[in-house]
Length: 361
Ligand SMILES: Nc1ncnc2c1ncn2[C@@H]1O[C@H](COP(=O)(O)OP(=O)(O)O)[C@@H](O)[C@H]1O
Ligand SMILES: [Mg+2]
Image (cartoon, rainbow, N blue to C red):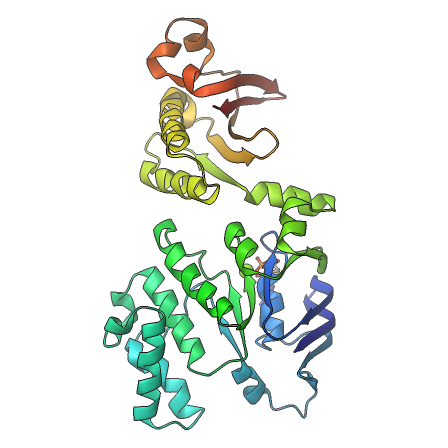
């Protein structure tokens, strides 16, 4: 259906895409993952011709998109895009957001456009918001409206650019459910996402983009469980973890809780582990309080499949500092219970960095 060959894109001196080759078949769901700045958005924008590629070719059903004779607006209707930031028209109601393009571009009557709009809003679960304005909706509802709007054009393929990354953790799943349903319905989709579990169960193929090329690709199982190349491995490990930078004793504990909760859900960790994690993190950050303002703490939480356990790492630079030194060597460890919730605690001093690594029970 889509064939991208030797696609390149430069912004001035900056060469973002060097030689990208992708073939997408009808009904395929493809996830694109890769580090920030690796050109994922640029790739989608090039495929959709929101950016003019510097070289290479993009063919859709055999039609060369870069051929000056090609009717680009017509092709673009076949291929709609959903953005991270929703891109709804804020001054229009939900209904107007959905009917504008079908009336203007497809020449539909208002009644017909509205009927279709209600049908699609029902599909994504927000039909009761038809008369509301975007700023009256939650982020998750806005994104579902954006998906419904995209569907009003009867696209043959939808490009999603990190559709859930500007949402609160609690709203991610409602949007992913809508995309899952489209996948089950056989929609062809290219999805840039950091939601690995979602990518794993929804996509036929996963592409890892780095260094301006499709650095590695495969089935979700190949890419997530058995990446072959070093950079892919490192990336997969990194996104399987959460990373939190804590710079002040008044850090937002609720955001941290929500992130840890979402992480536990993703890794399908037992409730007990989740509670222990929250307790340990809270206790630890209390102990770091005196040094937070001068040497912020970097907290990393990862699930280690090899050790079948959650690993929690606290790092900070500056003077040697091991907050557990005192409590573990005395009876105080009982007061926090951290000792009883962990299999091991390891303090290391590397250069000027303090690293405390814990493996949870
Ligand atoms: N319109 C633009 N002009 C100049 N540089 C850009 C433009 N769009 C993106 N870039 C640069 O291209 C690189 C890739 O960006 P992007 O495709 O947004 O990456 P990703 O979506 O993977 O995070 C970045 O270095 C970014 O700064
Ligand atoms: Mg991007």
